[in-house]
Image 1 (cartoon, rainbow, N blue to C red):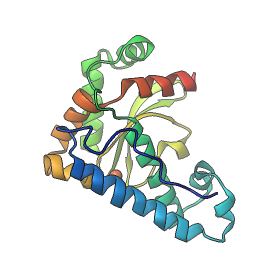
Image 2: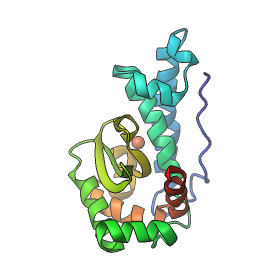
Image 3: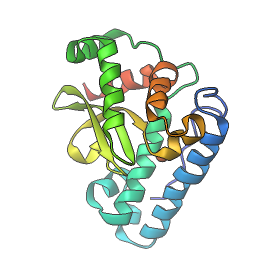
Image 4: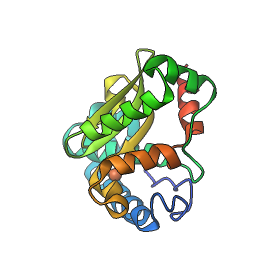
Length: 195
Ligand code: FE
């Protein structure tokens, strides 16, 4: 399968002032595209070249897994944001979050603590795990896809995601992500699809 870099769902300056154009230029054009280019080189003329990205992630290890998972994780991450995002979710998603975490504020605190608790590079996620909403973190390229968990929301907490906007302050980045950037419509859609 010939993989293409999916288009960003918004312009590179559309998330300003919370995520600047330069962050998107590097993160999307250099990091995300870099993982895709490396993956293409690694699987060229190999059996993996005929598989879907998800199938490669489910069966590969080492560099092929790392680059394939990073391609998938970043595409999902871009979709988790929108220019007029943030605030409170609504509907079934909001009810489920309140039921699970006690309140939307408690959910936010848990999600931020999850991202802060990830030592080094990785991601904070909201996943559906056996029908239960959970906040989990993953290391480096690791992804809940290989743990039979359904990703609903992610925030990339590699330093390349926030250093230009927030320097070393990951907590401020996670707060800005939830307050101003998260696309609750996208998260609700993932939850609905998961049933
Ligand atoms: Fe990243």
